[in-house]
Length: 80
Image 1: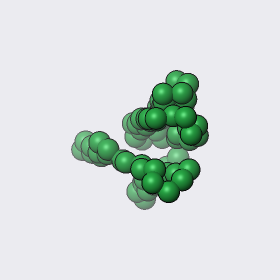
Image 2 (image 1 turned 90 degrees about the vertical axis):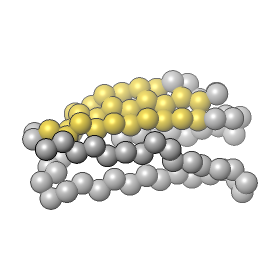
Image 3 (image 1 turned 135 degrees about the horizontal axis):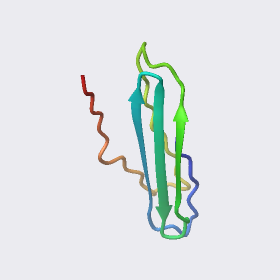
Image 4 (image 1 turned 30 degrees about the vertical axis):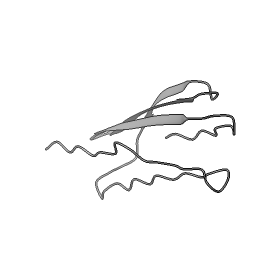
């Protein structure tokens, strides 16, 4: 859904990704930006079946020791 590479000159980089799950698939949206990294946004449809469940994986990589990466405001809302 979202893959961005920040520069070493970026003091902060942020990203946001959302998915609305429907019977026929999903609608995915994402946006990100940084202090140097330019703004990027997108919306795409997905036809992946979700009847057997979904797996959400969050990954990140750091350029050097001492850098930090924080996941904040992660939530899942399920409506009947």
